[in-house]
Length: 513
Image (cartoon, rainbow, N blue to C red; front, side, top):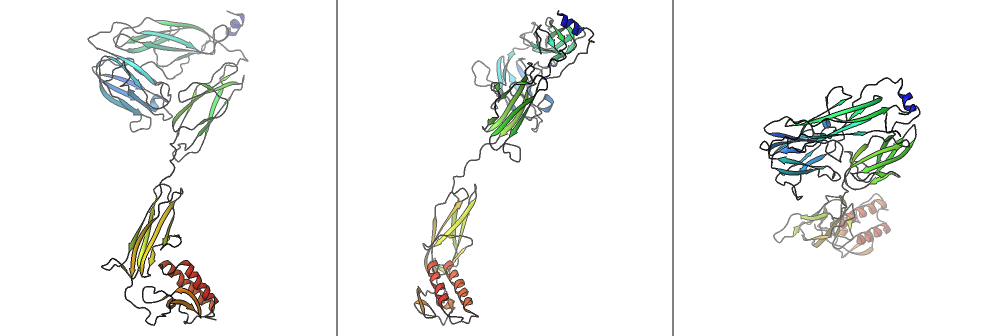
């Protein structure tokens, strides 16, 4: 032992032992019972099941799969416990597929009853990115084949070591056990420095300075106990100026999110780390169970689905931070609207035995679009200009008519134009017995050459313009003509051009002056 170590250890009081609770890969103890129960547990880690059985006996079995807050899943990560029914070399007679997450109706704990047969079963998590969550267990014939072989048990050490191989600050002992006799591991025990045997539930961190020995043993469900194993090591104090503190790593996620917190597009993960002693040397990340990668720039994730980002940092003294993780989900992208709206037209009114509409017909246009929504609806009468549709169109001019209609949605998809045809028949009522019978519309002697049509009730266009009526002034007469011709355009009696010709003639007249 070096003089430096001897001086460092001298005068240092023996500290207590600290047990750090952490996820354990050792299977839990199971009571012997007629109908066996096999339990799997999971947490937020997507690389492995937290606990899983390795052996079982043939017969009726209760399967328990728990992925809950109680088992360490505080991030809401879902997992499945699925039995493989296709890979050669395994039993395929049990179809099991359980999906569990801490916030489901069962709070993440689910059970199923199956019948196992001798052989080997393979199990796995089928969620994308969780591919390393898989394993197998062996089923024996059961009580007819007694287990007389003890389990095997091993211990491994981890921690920061100095040049002499001693552990600086603390050493962690991890114990694992396996049983090939068929009954399965029942309990694992350990003791530090010949103190007393204690049930092993998690890796053991020893922080007391000095030389230590940790013993361990395992007992299977048939009562066979393994030989005692042990590991020896020395824990030394760090130098006064020695950096034994790992850096602190953090992540920031950026991207557009919806009301549920789901990202609606790419997510940018920016990693950072701080270290107040020797300084940060490297930052690493692992995405969806892939390889650890050196972080050099923000990580952009665009694939839809659930993702898990693990990250860690190491300082220049070799101290590595605890592995951190961040879980997020990217929604499936919205599909573009490529479907045109649906548009229809209906003609209503009083009809005679020949099907003609007496006195006038009303055309109602309806457009619907279940995706981006209707932007515009248009119609045109008898081949005229397309006009924005805002209300049902009333057509009173006697004769045959055609109304075209179409619609466009907010994504720019235009529906194919449709048409309806119909005939208006005069109802025989003469609303203007002293009608102006001239062939064209004449205002104050100015012949517009626009046909002086019957508007459907015995009144001609000139009758409605009523140039011989009394008006308070010339502007009032022009406004009257504008209103009349606008209505006749809507009814299909006049075209827009004909209406304009009549209004200009009214403006040139002296009526009302």
